[in-house]
Structure formats: structure tokens, C-alpha cells
Image 1 (cartoon, rainbow, N blue to C red):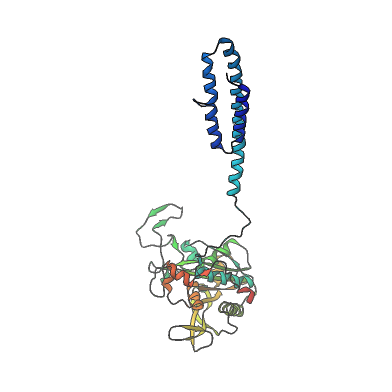
Image 2: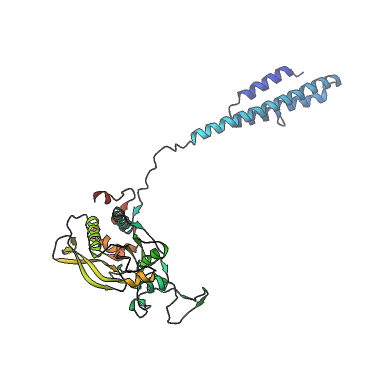
Length: 369
Ligand code: PHE
């Protein structure tokens, strides 16, 4: 005879003792599986007399139900406990400080643009931007560059392959005409035009960005970077331009006294125009900025041409100002002693490791002004 009371209490004790889902599953098979204790007990009923079969059968089936419920409850309890344990081991401490990735470096072009922006920010300039793909009007016409100007020819300017008609329709074009064709901006000066078109004077902006010219040799790359400076108000004169550029160069090269020379020059969009040279000394393999008998050209500048103001709806009798444009790579080469322009764009990680800057090394230049 099966001792049902003992069977129940032993089974429940065994279930309670299980300390993992795997152990519980084994226990379930031991009790309720094909050859399980309870299954076997139910099987013996076949040989029993009808009265026993009835009472014992009912008792065993009830035990089976209790055991099944107990297993189910234990299963839930263990799953909950196991999940807690897993969460504990997989815990992430989000308060830990981030580890900087030691391999990343800031490219000298980015660094120098940041330095220039920081210096001009101290002088009250904000940063403006314009598109790399420009049209003829913003890159040339509005800047008082006449249609016959050599810079417009295919030789210097990258024109994009399609001609745009006035109503915005595009057609393939092999004609020599470049008017209305989109182009890659040859300088950052079109941002002067966009600034005047989109806002109200006074203006005091710098515009850093990529520029493109169809030119490639030791000192020219087809893509390079410029920073444009642009000031318009009612009182600005050439003295302000000279002061602003000189102060900038002192701050940028971190020299109290850097000889600066304004040499008369020509740009269609400024009048008068000048090229800015800084004093330097040329050694055998290096150029030292500061006192010396040599001069080095670093930017173009001038007073904004009245025609440019008129083209943008400003009255030249009321508004005036100055503009300047400098090459970022050239300034980077001079300040950080980088000898070859072309290496800037070779994406050589060894070069970047050597000439690049630590991502967390924020320029401290403006504070030193
Ligand atoms: N845009 C001129 C260049 O690319 C530089 C410049 C800017 C000159 C502003 C004068 C005023 O050479």
C-alpha cells in the first residue's frame, strides 16, 4: 500500500529543497515523469480491488495536483531569485567617469579654427557659415568680380556638371558657359553676401570653412580651409581693420610684439585692399615668427567695396566696414612647424598622432589675451 501522507510530505520537502531551476526540473521528472514516483504509484492501482482503487486513486490524484502547484510556485520563486542574481552580476555603475579613448586626436585644422574662433569671440565676433556648393552670384557677381575675371574660368573653379536654368530645371551641359552652374566655393567671401542678405547691420562675424580651387602642387591642395572676417557698421575705418588683425596675430602666435605689415594689394570686393605680412626669420629648416628681416604673407583684407554693399541693399554712404580672409593650413603650418601642406589630407594616423591634439586639451588662448 502506498503511504499517501508520507509521499506528499516527502515530495513537498524535496521540492522546497531545490535551489535552482535545473534541480527543480530534475525533481519534477523524479515525481511526475513517465517513471516518476507518483506515476508509478498510480500505475499500481490497476491491480488493486475496486474500493481501494477508488479511494487511493482520488487521494493520489489530489496529491498530484498539490505537487504540480507546488512545483509551479517554486518555479516562479526560483526564476525571480535567478533574475535578481543575474542583474546583480550585470550591474553597471553609471556614476563611473568615462574613460577617454587614447587614440583619438584633433586634426590641426580643427584645432586652429577653434583657436581663431576663440580669439575673435573675445572681440565680439560670432561664427557664421555658408554652403560649400555655391552659385555664381554669391561666389563672384555679388562680390564685384566681373564676368571676365580670370578666377571665373574653369581653370581655377570647380564647376559642377549640370547647368541650372533660371526656373530650376536642370540639363546636361557641355557648353563652355559657366553662368548659372553650381560650383564649389573658391573662398569663404560668399558668406559676407549671405550674412548681409539674411540679417540687418551691424555685422561682426567670422566664417570658417572648406574652400576649393582646381590647383595642386607643394603649396596648394584642391581643398583647403579659410576663415573669413567681416565687420559692418557706421563708424569702422581702416585703423580698426589694422588694429583687429594685429591683435589677432599677436594672440594667435602668442607673441607680445609681432611685426605686422599691410602691403597695398587688389581684391575686387575690397577698396582699398591689402595683404598682411608678419615678420619672421627664415632658418635652414624652419621659419621663426617674430622679429627678423623676412616677411611672410598671412592674409588678404580691405575695406568692403561700396558695390558689394549696394549689391546687398546697403547704402554705402551709411554703412561701411572691413573684411579679411586667411588660410587655415598656412597658419597651422607656421604655428606648429608643420613642413608640408599635402600631409594635412593624407589621413596618415602616424602624422595625426604626431601633429594632432589631445581631445581634452581645450585651447586656453582667449584667457591669455
Ligand atoms: N577671398 C580672398 C581670397 O580668397 C581673401 C579676402 C577676403 C581678401 C576678404 C579680402 C577680404 O584670397
